[in-house]
Length: 262
Image (tube, rainbow, N blue to C red; front, top):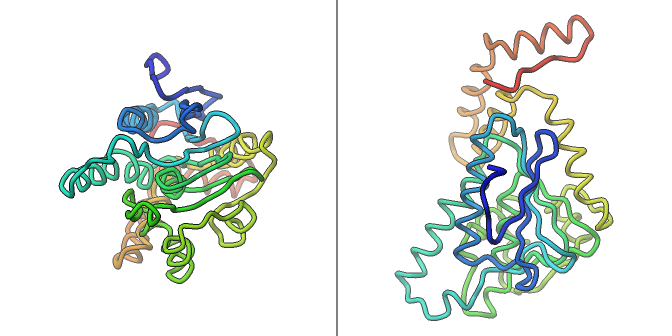
């Protein structure tokens, strides 16, 4: 994937961590169709690449993570075109990130508004710099969040707070986002990427198959069948080489040596 030329993304690798930066700084990293297509390509490539264990998604510059969707692209859409826009983006980008079998952390610097907020919510964890601002301004445009925001925000903060943020359209600070459980950590802008790498390095030492199973089970908690999925994924771990290695290492009081390939 390193050989792929992207117009709107910058990709770098540090050991087994893939850093995807949305690179439209002059447009505050707004999500146009081309950027969404490139995100699909970059994320799916990283998920297929056995040398990559995890992904960080961030935005270039200090002003914005992603300041929203590129409104100029859909300002004249009708209802059917709007439905296709939301369905395609959710299927190709936001749901792919949400259900990824490798951990994905959003590092939020500056504005995360509208589609940018939704992109952060789709990731498994979020780290915000002190300058981060979050919000769903869609109601001021006669819209609502369309990339899964109404669902993921409610799942994370609960119904009442989701109503407040979506219905007022007001922005909140990194500090309030942390108090609501929207972000895992707040750091200085200079330390945010390093904090994400620190977390992913710890995760990277764990069983890759177990990580994928855990992500699947946690995501299933939002479904009626969540408990059954947890039991199923838990039971599948028994008898695997990774399970045997993990238990042996525990008994032998050493670090486990998990192979990166399944």
